[in-house]
Each structure stands twice: as structure tokens, then as C-alpha cells.
Image 1: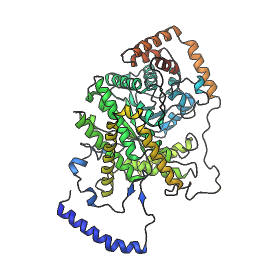
Image 2: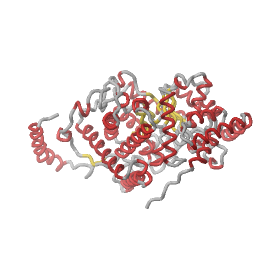
Image 3: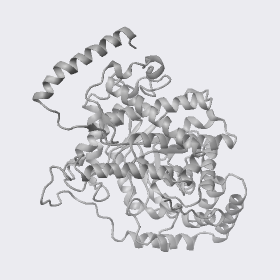
Image 4: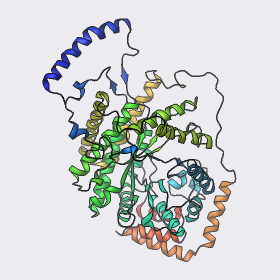
Length: 560
């Protein structure tokens, strides 16, 4: 962008500025800290100039919105054409309670559903299983059978809304329940729109909600990719998730490197299955966290698009431009929110949401101010949704595309994060690839070290968290309402499972489970067999137990 003569002149000018103007100012007004840093503990210089982006090539590195390499956005008009999708994550207690919350959110302007499941469901257990005791409905809705899914989605037109489901190990089973529920509404699977998180690699890396060993787990993911490619052209079969990696304590660069690296591993498995990259890659989506550091997060999103486009086109040879697009959902950082002075969380979320918008997200969930205390109350979730609407309608942030492009600081940070991603990928390659790196604890150690570093900085007051280790209040009373679930919900759920098992044709259930068992023991795609078991009202636990029997379960090794 700049010729060598102008850069030399600028370097000379900067040296003189440091010796005169800056030196004089610092002698009278010293800086607040010896070192400034990002949320990821990366040092920040006091000034960025063209010298920091001297090698930037506009056409090659930035380009135009809607054109390769998509640094400036995946659509030519971005939010001037249509706003991002407001997709509020919700689920708690019984299917009835969550159904009521979904209808409320849709009435308030929510544009799509996003389903949170409770821990028992995430681990493939029915609510009445001994392993599920005490976990009912606490972090999401309990779904044990097709009957629960029918109630969850009652009165919601599945042919008109898109639905995202945060489910991983039992993803294929929950997806089958959604598909069959839509069938009962008269909506064929080919017409359904939505996203299945289905990202098992990040479970081994960060969230730890795995059931089966990595190899058979990847087989199940590939089964869903293949099935979706052949039968559900509007469905995103994987949402490759960095959110939980970041929540576990990673840096921004680690989140991006590990997430995109996982995505490329799914591509490799699908190609080995015999799928054509341009048949399935356009339906892959990503899911990122947006933390507190405004500019670092914006740079992360811009780097993500450029890296993904390059890898899809140059490494994997995708020809369809839609295969090159890094389309992603964003959720503000739950881990950044505090139980102390919870109203401050409204401000944190607003800053994070604005960064996600300026970073070019396609859909957005804004966390509620009571995140650190309980599941969101109706009041809290409304404020969170209004935050997005104010950004869209009042802030002006959606009026132009990528307004921070060309900023010396933002472009430098974008390039730096991109370089760090490739450095991490080189380390993973040297370990033998993604699955061997998981087995050797590489990701886990990297995230653990980053989390330790961040907490140490807080403990030593090198980093201020308002209301926690700075500006704290000595006596603080709870000032916000807390959601309370139906105390009879657990008994109602147990009763429903018993009723389902009493009323279904158990002979047909047994035959469907046996057919699934034989498919799992062989090489057939398991999705058609899961669908048949679901149609007969086999429960989540019963279907998962078939896979537990065939595949076994996974226990994470202990690393020294």
C-alpha cells in the first residue's frame, strides 16, 4: 500500500515524534501502566501506523465485501441488505416451560430458535436414569423422547423458522427427533432450516461432554453430514464451535486456531467418506465467542473469514464460492459476566455485541445480565434482545460495511491473529493431526495455561474486573429477579417417560433398536436407523445405549 520511500520518511518522522512530542508529554503525563494488553494477554503498542501494515495488499488481503477472501464480509451489502439474525439461546426445565419462552421470544422479535438442553440430555441420558439425578432442567430443557420434542415445538411453524440446537454427542438422535416432529407437522425434511452444533472435537478439547471415543464419534458426525447433504439442503449439519473453547479459558488466537482446525478435520472426514466438497462445505457454519476486548474480537472475526476462504479454495480445491464462506453465529462471552454488580453485565454484553456486529457476524445471541446467577429471567432476556435491536436500529453500526477496515491497529491485529493460527496448526501437524493432538493433551494444556495466565493477572491486580477486584461494593444485596422453574416439572417429566413406554409398540421399538445396532456394527449410515427408532418412540437413552454398547465410552487420559 505504501512505497518504500514514503515508509522510510514515515519511520524517520515517527522516530522524531518519539524523541520530541512523546518524550515531552510522558515527562509531564506518564502512562497509566507500564504495559497494556488484550484480553488474550497480548501486548498492545501505544501507536499503530502504516509501518505496522506495510505489507498489506488491499485486493489480496481485504478485497471487497462478498468477494474472496471475504475479510470485509461474506455479503456484498451486509446489514444494509438485511440485519443479522437475532437468535436467543433458551431452554430450561420442561418442554412446556421452554415452549412458552420460545413463543415469548418470537413475539419480542427473535428471528430464530436456539435450543439449550440440560446436562442429562447432552450426555444421552433419559431424565429417569440414575446418572441424571439432580440435573433435570438446570442448564437447558430436558428431552428424553419424541414426545418431549413434540411438546417443545408445539405451535411453532417449523417450515417458517430456523432452529439451532446445541447438542453434540447425541446430536444425530436429537436431530432425528426434530425431523420427525416436523414430519408430524406436515413439513418435509428438505424444507427444514437450521443448524446442528454437532461439533464433537471441541468436546474432547474443551467442554468434555463426550460419550463415545473420538473415532466412532467422528463417524456419527460424518453420518449426519452425509445425510444432510443428500436429504436436507437447507440445514447446516455442523456448527464448528469456538465458543466453548473460549469459555474454557483460551485466547482469541487459540479459539480461532482450534475451531478452524476442527472444521478442516471435519472436511477431511467427509472427503474420505466420498462426498464432494462443494456438495457439503456450503452448509458448514461456525460459532464464535465474543469477549471483552473490542478490537481483538473484531480482528479475530475478520481473520476467520480470510483463513477459511483460503483453506477451502487453495488447500481443498473447492470451486463453489459458497464453499469459501465463513458464515458464523456469535454469542457474547458468558465467562466474562459477573455475579457481583450484575447490572454491569448489560454494558459488557452491549460492547461485545457491537464488536460482533462490526466483525460481520451472521447471527447473534446476547447473554442476559443474570447469566452468572441463574437461567435468564424474562426481564433479563428482553434487555439482552433489546440490546441487539438498539445496535441495529439506533447505533449506526449497521449503516456501512466493515467500517474499521484500513485501521492500522485493526489490520495489524487481524494479520497477527492469522499468523498465530498457522503457528498453532504447524504444532498440531507435528503431533500427527487433530485426533493425536487430543490424545496427547495438546489443546487441553494450551487452554489451561492461558486460563491460568488470565486468572493470575486478575489475582495480582494486573487486570481489573469492574465490581470484582476493582470498584467493588462492600455490601451488596440481590437487586434483580431470578427465574424460578416449575417445582412439579420433574415429576411431570418422569410421568411422561413412563407413559411413552407404556403406550408405544415395544416390539417395534426392539426391532428398530436391533436394526440400529447392526448398522452401528457395520459401515452403514446410521441416520435412517436412528430416525426409525425415534418414530417408534425409542427414548434418547435407549438409542444412546445402543451406541454405548457398540462403540464403548471414552475416558480422558491423565497427562503429567
